[in-house]
Length: 154
Image (tube, rainbow, N blue to C red):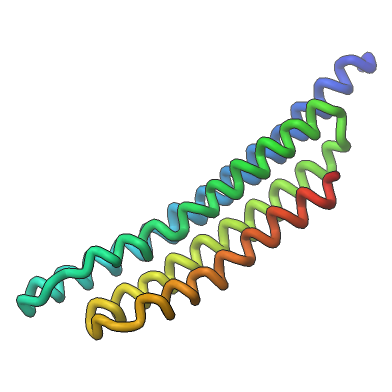
């Protein structure tokens, strides 16, 4: 292959890493919001069955895992720029896959924790700030991964 073709292939593979970062993060967000959403719906149903007010705050727990997709998008833009600048595609593909998985797992597990928070808040009406703090700790993993991968990739 001529050098121009090799360069284009490398850029394309680098962009594939960027796509992996956002896609895997989004899969985690979908799993997380699905888990938290199903729990919130169940908690609301339980409230309605008991003639209690259904707390609208549960939507906070449902939406929390969406931010990991934003972190994947930020990483995707950063990695796409690096790919266009000719950064080694090996690092971009590996970084995109592993970062996307880590960010995605953070979102998924945040949603599972949000599901527990939904049940607890609907049952007791207390603890919203504590539950939100726990979700924030889980989200911190995704932020750390995004930042550190961006640092490593330069």
